[in-house]
Image (cartoon, rainbow, N blue to C red; front, side):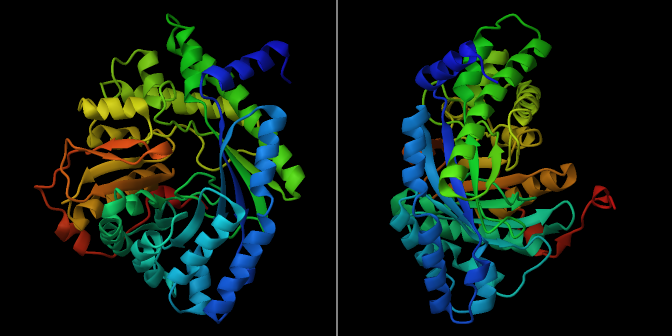
Length: 452
């Protein structure tokens, strides 16, 4: 339980250190909306979402007023749409437009779930949905898309990897007049979690209940501030400080999730412990790493510092919530983290170093802007590398890269809001991976998949 000192400290974290609940996300199963007629199916989807999520935004605002806790986003995640498209056939973009219309009707920021799970192969309708992603994201405002192309149990579907390189490049081209935002709303996963509340990778897994509330917390600024009070402690003490801070942050998320569940009359799912940074000054995971003693994020020692941070966040947070899930740990999205942006601009942080860091953090290569002339096969190769890290290490990894059409390394792409701005990072575009990607097939699952 909190004592008076803890309560006052939490208030200070909210007031001065950018502490917030990043999102409350309502997950909704659309399996009951499947229909052989796509028009009828879309009508069922719209009706179910608007009925269940009608009060999500007002309830979130009520909780903010009652407890003084900022809740930055109210979002929706739905069953992977490829499962509906398999039954209905027809143009899957109709589902994207329906999701967008429903999201606007209930007032949420984003809806995730224009998705497919193809880690072991393509089922009916999945190729069609994946190929439609660029059009779907270009013609909607609030729809996000994800594709799971690998897992520790299944290996990596390299045919899907090759396709996703083409899809990401096409999505960037179709939204070139909007700073290539289409690509910023696509995540390619290995070992995708089915209860993730964060965009753009959120979808509502088939093992989840019909409807639930998941919460994603934040708090990099609060962690950095706590570490600033321990300037000379050894790394055991540093870990302890992070654990205690993560506990307090997660308790706040637990409170919000419990209250939202009660007021909406739907089950409480999980709290995702992930430290989600923003471009705001003082709200950076990179700056936590620098507070530990690394001169600039990307210098030698960065991966070890991030491993300590990720572990301590999980150990501190897991005791503070009845159910922990999602991704849980530390995010390192380049364009959404003020410290990462600075390090990328100074070229202290390279994509190779980021790849190494993904072996120990929550997700993967996130919100990285790359040159617009990057071949689709190179994008696919980046996805394959990241998926291999996730597959072999039995962890979630993901790729969200944005080809900046018409721009080169060293320039910048400005997104605004929580998406921030992205320095365009250099790649080895003079060296080809095309033959490797063209081979297709599957990379077999590793030995550690045989745990039965």
